[in-house]
Image (cartoon, rainbow, N blue to C red; front, top):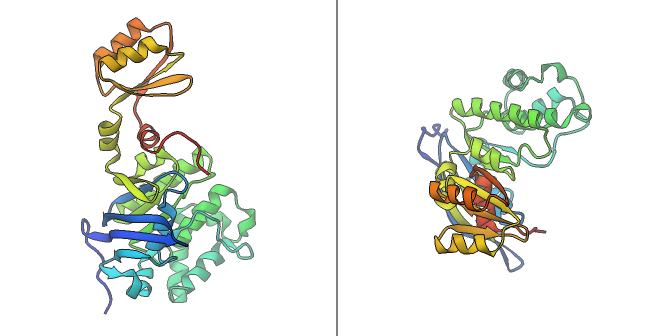
Length: 311
């Protein structure tokens, strides 16, 4: 029996205590979350946080070591073929066939879903138009710019008209114009009721696209929520960065229980909307180089996962 499309607001993905282990090393250590139909849900984290392993389990590339993973109320261990027909995956790497044209890449991929030829052709033409690729239909993949190749990769992921679309770092390496164009297309797909799971290293992208997100590190979920709510809860509405700060400023902030991070050459002060603190810094420490700005999701990310480089 064919599955009925999931209604908006219903749970489309349920992850319970999901774990993944490689040779005794835990890459994902018992994470739990749910994604509802019609939303964009982000999985964020530094390299090695476990998000890629989690994504691979969700789209069936790797089996879970422990826990439960259900998509469309179906268990991925038993019903992946039924699930796969309703999921689209835009992988980070370029997996397009370089020997085929743009149109042929779409048509060949449609065959994997056993889509009838006339229906596949119609669907491919719609996607070429949607992603403004009509003029490149006969071009080989090697002739495409990075932005065009990413648009084709996303178009290919949509050939089966999926309900759930997994975007694994979809705009990595794109210039700002191409990135914003892709965001526009994703917003248009959201308006059609599509559901997205997004991984990205661009915090601006996550804030722009995600309704809710989790930040992971060391295989575990650190926080979950809407971007604006997480910013307000963890770093506040505004940030003050002070270069050349001395102990006097540190003591001033500590006495007033103002949260801050201290780097080698500067302080990052989490003001949390305290106008008096901002005025005091402006008036009493004006000789230092101070930057006053709005807080962002990147501030949350760095505060929770640290600022050191990861391998």
